[in-house]
Picture 1 (cartoon, one colour):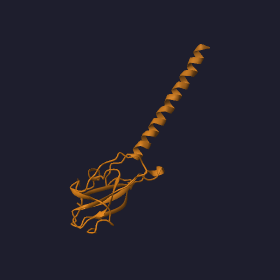
Picture 2: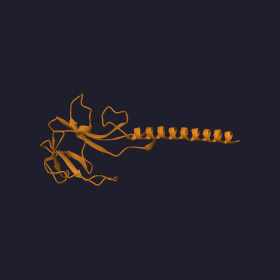
Picture 3: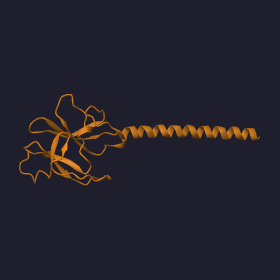
Picture 4: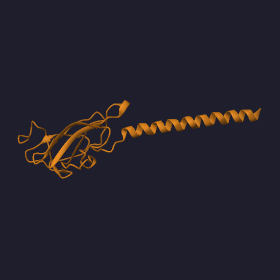
Length: 148
């Protein structure tokens, strides 16, 4: 009798462990869906808008990722060199709490402060800071007269 009870308990424990492994692998897939490489070549990359600088050296991208059944990711902004083989958006990511609104005639990137819907760690940026080789200006299109 004790032998049968131990066998039944063993089978139940093996089933519980199997279910645990299955759930863990499903969570890995969910985590993978939300992980992205910030690349123009990423399969789930969704371009919202882009704009080339007046001197044609840089381009900024506004984009997000398609997470399948989980919808779309938050919006990201990045500025990179406008070269044919350049696709790594990670090195030009704009810090949380700021978004790109355009270019000035002097090839400076116009950044605007904003409050995203998700929790962020505040970053202090000042005009003149360079992001990936591009000088930035804080403001918006309405407050900067020499923009494009």
